[in-house]
Image (cartoon, rainbow, N blue to C red; front, top):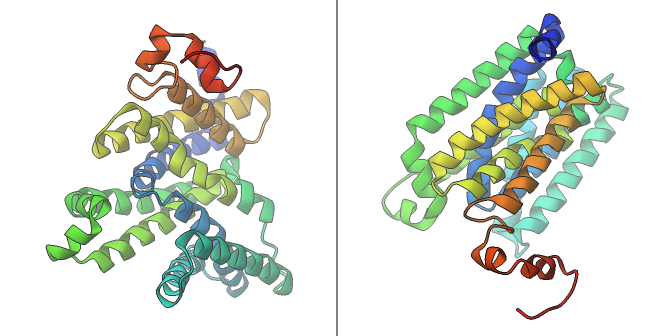
Length: 295
């Protein structure tokens, strides 16, 4: 058993993968907890798609792709806010329109600018290809976000659950919203290298949802989600090593399995642990729609 655990650590690329996986696994659920309680999980998916034009342009100009991705992600949120303020278009429709448009623009720019950008790596991640530079950059981003969350936790908590009340007491809600959007964008950028754009939303909401089913307080949700995210990342990397499957999808699938377990067996919110299920097991089949019986 000990040899099974230590063998992957003899390779530098595995040590790097586990290190960045732990950082991303801690960071994503903490930011994702705010998305979940605000019912804005789709925003993470939108920004994840909208960074592609910025990546393409920055790659073409030879500048740090972090800059282009950040600018592109922030522009997408401003566009959504502008559409909502200038029309009767609902927020979900504005988000869908924005991310599809930005993503299409990004793919087009890659072709027109003849960039040698690895689209597969961008979409699905390449955690086994991370370098020490990638780890250091991700650590810096994570440290900035986590310190900011700690310093302004009470203000953001108030804003999260009562935007009108926060504005009434004089909190700078526009600045808080801008900072929150920036944090989501930076988190996505930091996670792209490991799990890719298409899977990063799962890391944002997966471990946080597991924690949401198990605890009631937001700070407990963030702490438990961070712990679950770190464990999920480590398990996914080990599974990818021993079973020769892509690391990003392996991490996400582990998260999905744990979520289903929590959904079924959570002590307070589990489908199979509700009092009526314990006293009347036949209700399980009724909930699943397998047959109709007396309730």
